[in-house]
Image (cartoon, rainbow, N blue to C red; front, side):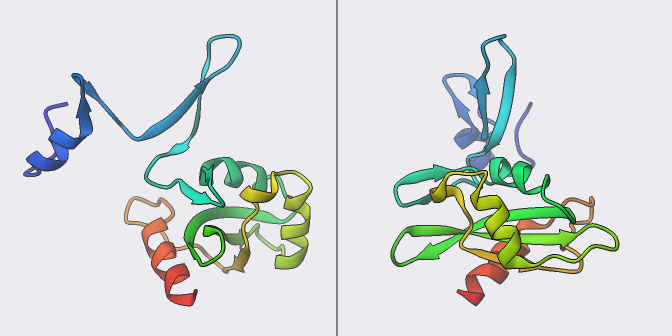
Length: 144
């Protein structure tokens, strides 16, 4: 990796002790396999606890009728930050935000439970087809 194009400051900030830091958060299981928990840039702190959206998203994707999801953090006066869950229903399905939140509350720690659930017909995408979390963050922050 030679660096970010025309961004020497970003390149310098990404290296520590000669290692390129991707921002991915990994854990190692008892068999020596590494698992990606999320990204540092997406992590938010709710009530003093780190919440990794990728972890919450992986669980929500198991819920009935769920197609695609994205979790973002937004400021909250009581908890510092709270999660906003954006859900795109699976083809032909409908999503009840309260039921989805109740389903999730039985499977995840309370501090990780998104405070808000927003159902969207389709989640916004970037030109490369990935979910556009930046636009969801902007939308969630303007609504809070």
